[in-house]
Image (tube, rainbow, N blue to C red; front, side, top):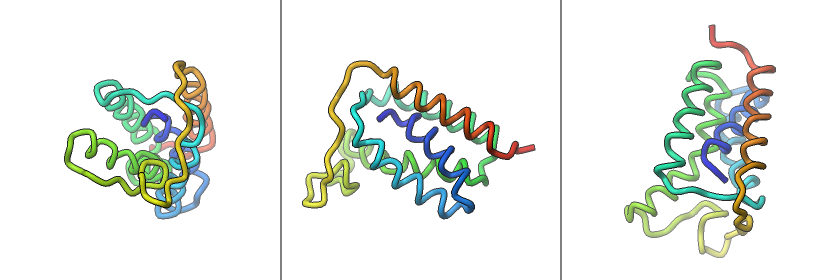
Amino acid sequence: MMAWVHASVGAFIGGRAGSKKRAFSAGVVSHGVLDKFPHRDYEIPVELPLCLIALAYIAKRHGVKSPEFAGAIGGISPDFENALSRFGLLKTMLYPTHTSKPWFIGHGRRIESPVTQIILAGVCLYLAHRWGKASG
């Protein structure tokens, strides 16, 4: 799943979680759930700018101290190990949808089109925007 989609879903779930700690945790869990669905991942030069744009929007709309932002950070946090691994800085990944360890729960099959991810992220950003509290 694209990182900006993880951030968008995390923001929506985070806004419903009630606290920043629960929002972050819910974002981390949502990452694993989303990884199980068929999806397309992109390389870091595509992923990073899209993720930063999503995070900037969430921060501007809800604030960096909001549960929405905490959920977004939780949603993308498991992909930090993916990035470190791709740069050769991490040899073993631990997140259940990323690892080759016995607790590996699988990863969704690869599909070519990102359309379903774009729709999911758009809906989640809209719902977080609609139901969230404006930052000021």
